[in-house]
Amino acid sequence: MSCLHLKLFFKKAKETFKSCIQRNKLIIKTTALAFFTIILLSMLSTVLVFSMAPWLSDWFRSVAQSERRYIAIPPPFTENLYFYIFLNNVGHFWNPPKMLVWIPLLGTFILGLEHLLNGGVIGIVAVMTGITHGIFYPIVGLTPHGILEIPAFILQFASIIRWHVTTIDVMMAKITGEKVESTRFKQGVKDTLILAVASVILFMIAAYVETYITPYLLGM
Image 1 (spheres, helix red, strand yellow):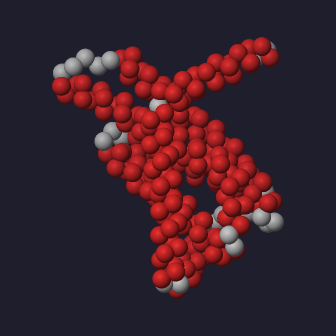
Image 2 (cartoon, rainbow, N blue to C red):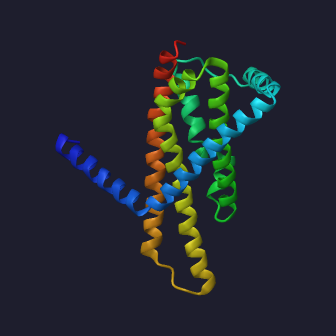
Image 3 (cartoon, rainbow, N blue to C red):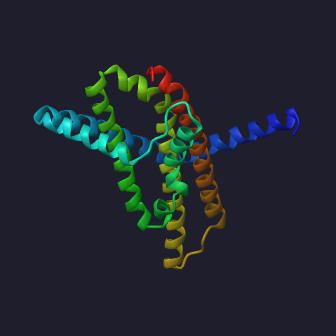
């Protein structure tokens, strides 16, 4: 592929992505608002609980340490850690049990739980890390890859929501005996794929940062 063709390809891809974002901006904004709200509430709740019952902090820390003994997390600066992080993050697409989120109607409930779980875990981890290592540690440890990973999660959830909106729209048309708008359905499927691919690309970059840059900043 020549340089000119490559430029045209990336220009077309950029325009397609921008159009997709514009069409689905309400879904993306709502998803982002819910995600950040869950993170904030999780952090505030964790701080409140730990201030009222300090022993719970030690208990959570001991549970996390015991889990690490059963889950072999690869060391930093290694290819194994990169793929561990990347595959774990994109698990909502390619991990068979989690692909239940794609099932129309049923998947919406699972997606809500996943949304709550991911945001909650991020908030708890941030507070726990801050308590253990100081307030600047989670900032340095989470921000570099978080500015890519969190938008990736938002696009990931948005793509699944777009799929549910598309499929439920078709189901409702079938139930009411109305004609299914094939153009609208195809556009919905296309937007779902675009958002999904964009999230995977961001996860790839975020996993690289978390594997090779974050450990360096933390002095690991």
